[in-house]
Image (cartoon, rainbow, N blue to C red; front, side):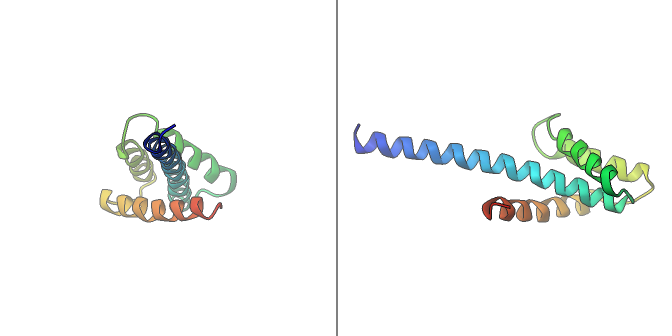
Amino acid sequence: MSTFDEREKGFERKFALDSEMEFKAMARRNKLLGLWAAQKMGLKGDAAESYAKEVVKADFQEAGDDDVLRKVKGDMEAKGLSFSEHQIRREMDELLAEARAQIKSGG
């Protein structure tokens, strides 16, 4: 195998690993977002964990973050809470950074 082939394989492995890590970070972000929203809605314990799982599942409806945003915003509005799309997206961004840090640290 040539040096070029070895480098190409190395880049492919890195790309696959990076993609897997980002998928895990997004799933963790969604769980953290679900727990955050659950706390705002007054859910605790098993109810909060269950809601967080629903938020993770919501991400599989379509590509991007809009499906998760719609779920959380809609559920919060149904509970009489008023959070803007901007506020929820800001929380999503902060939680994604936290999730990436947790994944990198092995937590």
